[in-house]
Length: 267
Image 1 (cartoon, rainbow, N blue to C red):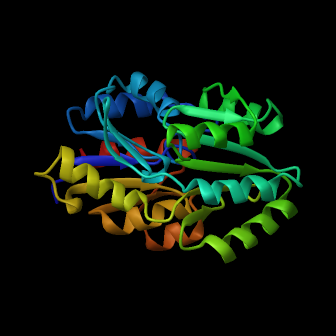
Image 2: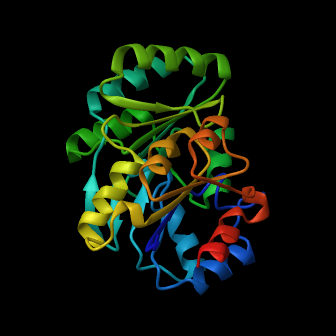
């Protein structure tokens, strides 16, 4: 099979133990150019562009928010946001808990304060949020006719469990809930996935490439549909068991340059 496009998850897959790109990974991505190397993540675009700069592939499209926002340079190929009615319920539900809510739209990231959770995300993603209350953001978005591409709920595991149960029961037809960690819930619109995002990308940017000519890398539950759909779905060795079971191929861990090793082998 001739593989003509590469899509990779970032956290837990591409970045090493220091949450950075290794020299081996940078070198391999640059070596295989001009094969498109597309970052596909739950991150916001701003948290992905500094990685593109290190690869020197800033003009390659990016898929943010698990497919909620697809960008080809400054052109929006696809955008799906969460209904503000749902967001309002989540804000009200969390107001009586200690749960931190981060709200994202495109390159906007709002936090109610620079607490432990906001500082940790800022350190991990190299992006600084804007401090504004959740209710003020909601009011602003209603006026601007915007919505959240992603809602990040972070906090005590017991409170997160209760919120997850409530949201799954009441809004499973509207939102997708993803537990990236026991203390996290990442929320996106129900209709999107990394698989559907790749299909949009191929249609708009690479119509000559079939999804069977795509290699994809991942480690977590939100990567499963993507890895099953592409021509070669590769799981890093540190991936969740469910991901390892469906992957076409298993490489080394993210800490040991698993992505770079497959690129070296295939190209």
